[in-house]
Image 1 (cartoon, one colour):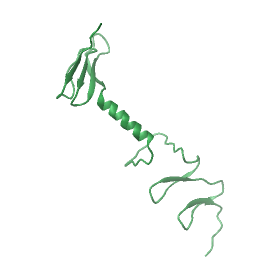
Image 2 (cartoon, rainbow, N blue to C red; image 1 turned 30 degrees about the vertical axis):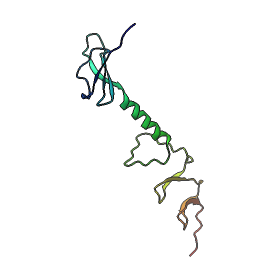
Image 3 (cartoon, rainbow, N blue to C red; image 1 turned 90 degrees about the horizontal axis):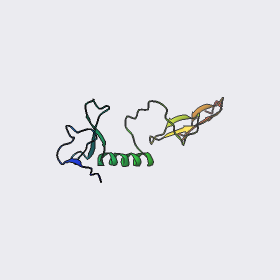
Image 4 (cartoon, rainbow, N blue to C red; image 1 turned 180 degrees about the vertical axis):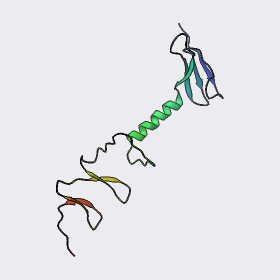
Length: 129
């Protein structure tokens, strides 16, 4: 039977060196490390591969992805952003409470805002005075 030994430290955030395949755990950083090399002649590097910190981050990410009503500051999207609750080909508007909503019309209609602030698409009728 093989015995697996893991180096541990209560005070160092990361090991300075490990042998290829050697494991180390830092309780101060909550990280698991392994000594890793690409070839038999390459220098061994210390790689972060897991630990409590990673498990906590994944659990936090799950709660962010699953929950509703999230608030983001300085949100940037590079690529496509899909809003599943808004119909395709909608015009996006921001309501007074900061929520994004979609308004959809048909060809020939004009985007308008009712007296109560509700946006809609309709034919342009000249209005009343």
